[in-house]
Structures are given as structure tokens and as C-alpha cells.
Image (cartoon, rainbow, N blue to C red; front, side):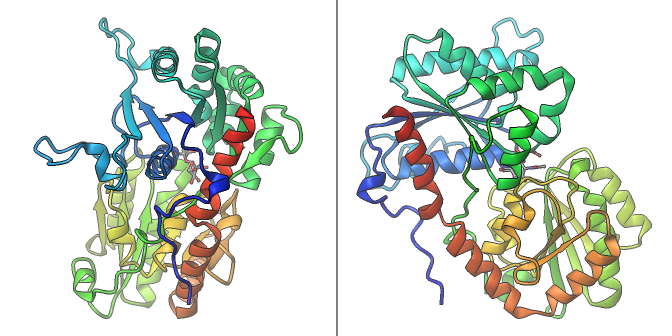
Length: 405
Ligand code: GMT
């Protein structure tokens, strides 16, 4: 049996970085890069590293403090035995004269990073999502009286979509080339980044995303499932930002095919531009009564933990963090065979990978995955054994330390 390790277990002595001060710069909206940045900040802070999280508003996975809370907000994340505050949040300064406020984010972020770095003696600024933050960090580095290193973590569309656009390519490539280190969340993305931004071969460090398997775990209380499905029905889940690249309409199509063959219901979690089309398609395919649309849910493990199958038919997916979180909950994944997904989902072991847009193949794969209880065990085991924080977090710390050495 696989025994998950505690998420806040101390790092070994070689991994200790208590004296190091980090700033983590990320987008606040409910996307994977912001989730990874926030979880990394929380995990390192819980292990004694001082982390300053910088974003335009409180990131999605960093809930606001309750005004009448008996303990300081940061103690909700950092173990109570820690008296020293290790987690700080700084909002990117907004403009007093708020004309074109959003379009100034690259510059306002640079000035905020410079101020935080100087006031708090930051050693490493770690950006998540290159656009615009790799550029902001580089600018802050050139402005700052404090000498710090810049690590840029590439997440996906900052390389494969936006980073290729002529309107953004030059500044993004320059910022990544001049940063002190670049990381990518999968081998596939690292190769893409090296080609897209003319980087030296093997210069991008591959550090995959991770999952807290104590938080993301199967929920066995069948009474909780009753909120979504009857006892004889399968619960299928999709979580995304409902962008075209995620192909959420294919989720509806695949589900429509599944529910013709077995009793099932679908929960679609998230918001984004394609959501209304999904609602319409569900109506056209006459599955409206079997599909529930929910808004973004910070405690997504409460839904994933109940699921029987996770669908991710994306056109592009550098990693697929939501798929990994589902696997950690013991949920097999049926996904498209693109990007970094084959590095996460093992075809025929923890789910199936199908050709992108092939809805019929995904329907058959889903029915097969739903009939194989061993997939559930294998999915959880892979998440725990390969993507545990204890394996992944030290790799970031090693990188920071190597840059500072
Ligand atoms: O690229 C995006 O779509 C945005 C980004 C985000 O902020 O949600 O998602 C990417 O980063 C995630 C975290 O590393 C990965 O799990 C996603 O696969 C990746 N999305 C894409 O590559 C489309």
C-alpha cells in the first residue's frame, strides 16, 4: 500500500533554505500557474522559507483572512509551531490615476517587485507565467539596489500560444534569455520553450508540478456523492478555465456518448469564454438534466474526491495540473494525447490518452476506464509516488541555492 507523506514534513538538512528570502510573482486569476505559485509559496513557507507572494489581488488559492479570525491569516497555512511569520502577501500597486490600469501591469509589477526586494532583502524573484512577469522581473532587477536572482517558470500558453505571437515574442524571449534560470513544468514544454525562444539545448530545467496527496484523496463517504449522483450512476468531472484550448465542448460531447451507454452525470467546474456554448450544447444534445455547471471552487478536492472519471480533451496542455489532482484522488483520467499530458497520465494504466478531437475514441476510453477499478489505485499511486511535494519542492530549493552559491 502506498503511504502518502505529510505535506508539511520538514525538508532534509541538505534542503533547508531558512535563510533564503523569496518573492513569488503570479497572476491571481484561477489558472494553473497561479495555483502552482500559491501552492509553492505555501509549501515553502510551511517549511520555514520566507516567501513574499506578489499578485494583482489575492490569488485564488490564498483565501482572504476572516476579519474576526482568532489567529493571524498566515498561520492558517504555516504550522502553528512556527512563530516567525514566513508568508507575506503584497498586492501589485494600483494607480492613483487608474487610466489603462490593467495594461500597466508589467510596469506596476516591476515597481512592486523592486520595492519588495529592497524592503525585505529578497534573494530570488520567482515568476510564474512568463508574460508579462519575466519582463517585469528583469526590469525590477535592473532598477533595484538589492541584488537578486530571477527564476522564470514557464507554464504553457506563455510559450505555446502567447509567447509565439509576434506582438509578444521579442520581449518574452529576451526576458527568458536574460533571466538567471528558466524552468518548465514538463519535458515537452521545456523543448518547446528552447525552440520558441532560441534557448540553449537543455538550458530549461524541468520541474514538474506536484500534488498534496493528503488533501487530494479519495472521499469514501457515499452520502457526499448523493449531492451529485444516485448510487447506480457514475460521476464524471471536468475542471478548467473554459477556454477554447481546453475544448470543453468536447467534454459535453464525450459525456453525451457515455450516458447513452451507462447511467452517469457530469459536473463542469470553472468559468470562461466557452461556458455558455457548453450550456447550449448540453441542451442540444439533450443532457441538460445530467450536467451541473459550478463556478470555480478553491476546495476542488471536495468534488474530485467523489469522482469516477476526469475528462481533459485539451488541444494544448503543457502539464494538466487538474488531471494530476484528480489522479491523486484516485480518479482515472481520459485526456488528449498532447503536450505534457503523457508525462502525467500513463496510457492504459492510470487512464487513457486519445487523439485530440477524437470524441468517439474518448467515449470508448471512458467506458473502459470506468470499468477498471485498478486504474483508480494506479492513478493514486502515481500521484503519490512520482509527484509528491517531497520529491519536487527540493528541486526548486536546489535551483535557488545553486544560483545564490
Ligand atoms: O497556459 C495556460 O492555459 C495557463 C496556465 C494557467 O495559468 O492556467 O496553464 C498552464 O499551466 C498549468 C500549471 O502549470 C498547467 O497544468 C497547464 O497544463 C497549462 N495550460 C496549458 O498548457 C494550456
